[in-house]
Amino acid sequence: MRLRLAAGEGFSPPTTEFFWQPLVGDGAFAFTRPMLLMVLSVAVIAPVMVFVAKRMQVVPSKGQFLTEGTYNFVRNSVGKDMIGAKEFRPFIPLLFTQFLLILVNNLFEIIPLLQFPTFSRIGFPVALTLVVFAVYHVVGMRRHGVGGYFKRMVPPGVPGWIVPLIFFLELITYFVTRPVTLALRLMANMFAGTLLLVVFALGGEYMLLEGSNLFVRVASLGSFALFVIMTFFEILVGFLQAYVFVLLTAFYIADSLAEEH
Amino acid sequence: MPNALTAAVRAPEAESVWTSPILPQPGELIVGLIAFGILYWVIAKLVVPRFEETYAQRTAAIEGGMEQAEKAQAEAEAALREYQAQLAEARAEAGRIREEARSEGAAILAEMREKASADAARITEAAHKQITAERQQAVIQLRSEVGRLATDLASRIVGESLQDDARQQRVIERFLSELETADPNQVRTVATPATEGS
Amino acid sequence: MGDREPQDDDQQGTRPHAVGWNALSYMLSGLLLGVGVGWLLSRWLGTDLMMLVGLLGGMSLSMYVIWVRYVREH
Image (cartoon, rainbow over all chains, first blue to last red; front, side, top):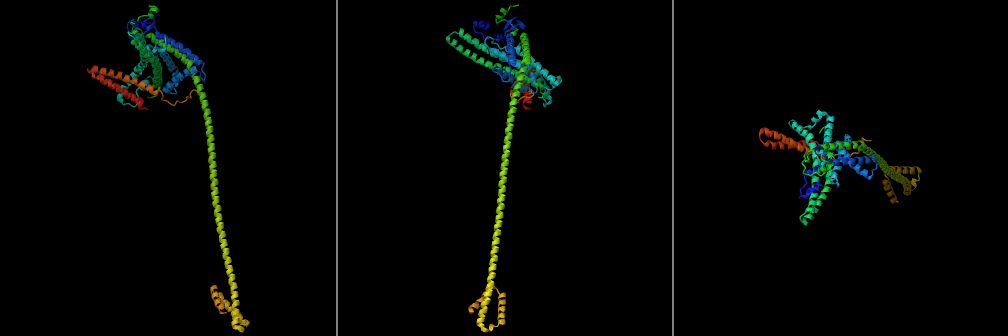
């Protein structure tokens, strides 16, 4: 592949260009490798979940136990805990879909052949974040009215002179930092982890194949060992980022629904 | 339009703004939205309702089990309460019996004590009476004895002079009336010189 | 049937995580607001010192809001 090609002419560390992998076409609407992975993830998740759902039993089988554990985690530990037992139900599909989609695509990072985290491409986190952004604003405005929604951004019981400052701060938080950090956190974590994996893999390969002496070639084992350790670490990161994303989604929704801060 | 093969093996140096890590490529953004939309539809329509149904069934089953357990616990508690009530009752009963016995015992004791003291009093009184009676009898006997002795003595001393009945009668009468007014002690002192004198 | 949810022991289980991440958003907002206002004041007054004042002020404001929202009320 291109990576090996790059390694051929002296070691050049991978750059951000690694993440731009168009398969068909070019430019703004090129069909890229992460797009294929995204489509693949939906093609895997949807039938599996429907299959599990169809065969649901009160006493779970092993496969059902695993999916149900995931479902109950998102439903109770995230949805119910954050939004509250009264109102969390309509948001279960949103949270569960997000969690599955992010988790599976994050795990693609370490699955052989796929080996690419879809969400390291900012377009995908932005897509999910747009949904979250729309949901928590719409839900909040429906609950409090448009005026009421903005009015309640400022918590009660603060000195009058500080109210405009807090209002601006909240405005920036609700409309800029919340969505931006939500998308960037996911993207940056997957991006950085993958970059490290690529560095260790390519570095090890380069040292092994092109090493000037035996010592350097043996030292490549260290690079591969780090690659393996990082791989396990990335599994953890994949889960954690999926969790943080749905957690914050639920938190923002809860924040918009809350009567008062 | 470049064909798929050349696109796939294009060199990494190829300049493109979409290599930027923070610039969303519209294609990826749209695919992301569509993919999310499709999966959301599947999850919301086909998956979550089934999961919720099972969840509710299981909750019901667990609650049913809990109800049963609660019932069993309530039963056990009731039994315990009953047992405790019985125990308390038995204790009260025992206490009552003990109390009864104690008061009864006290009553018996008091009665016996009373009876004993009454008996003692009665016996003492009887003894007193007997003693008095005996003394009375002794006095009477003594008096007649003394009278007879005195008469005998006097008749011996005075001789025939006292043969006169009338006189004798008078002497005896006077003597006796003197005895009457005197103490038994004096009787003895009166009698003693009389016996000594013989 | 559906309304009866078994109560979890830890009602606040995952909430602190979210509050922590959200506090980060507030800090960034404060930074943006402070630097923005500081930059405007610097241009107006012709001194770069206002940038620093704005930055510190923005951070303080963020911390105040975080305190009001998540510390004072719990």
